Amino acid sequence: MGRTGLFDLEKHFAFYGAYHSNPINIAIHVLFVWPIFFTALMILYFIPPFFNIPNCEFYLFGNHVVLVWNVGFLVALTYSVFYFTLDLKVGSFAAFLCVLCWVGSSFVAAQLGFPLAWKVVLVAQIVCWAGQFIGHGKRAPALLDNLIQAFVMAPFFVLLEGLQTLFGYEPYPGFHAIVQAKIDADIKEWQESKQSLIS
Image (tube, helix red, strand yellow):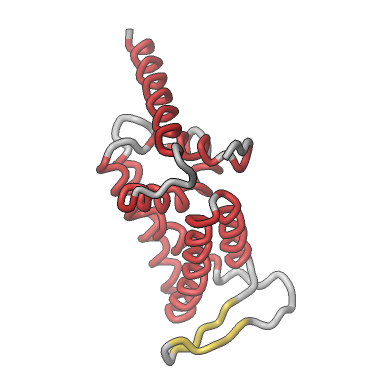
């Protein structure tokens, strides 16, 4: 509470929420955001490791899993640490999902091999991104106004939004009311600016 800049959860969530204010759009993002993250990690699996550190190898349900300490690991780690700093409870859950995505995507990528994996990733990314763009309707997606925030914050916010909708979770009392007021103000400003361009 009272955080500023990069760790201002209210500001980030209000920005994201202003672009995702109708149920259909929210449902589309809940459905597609994490698969985008997962499949991005899948293709990053094939980038060589940074250092000559031995891969982490183990068996999961009888299947051989190889984890590579490369860009994919760094992305998952960065997302995990950042989410954890935003909110202890949801951030911990989001960090756990990031690690799970890294392990799961590594397993799938290794099983498919690069010749098939890149095709799976390409199709999944096209379908997921197309769905998100269509779901925005008249207002352009958030990534067109703030690319980094949209990419980095999206997985965290669909998770926070889901927990808020299903269980009434708030990082602290009054969070939802404060953010909703900011979202309403942003949408009103956008509608007024759009109206002024038309008239």
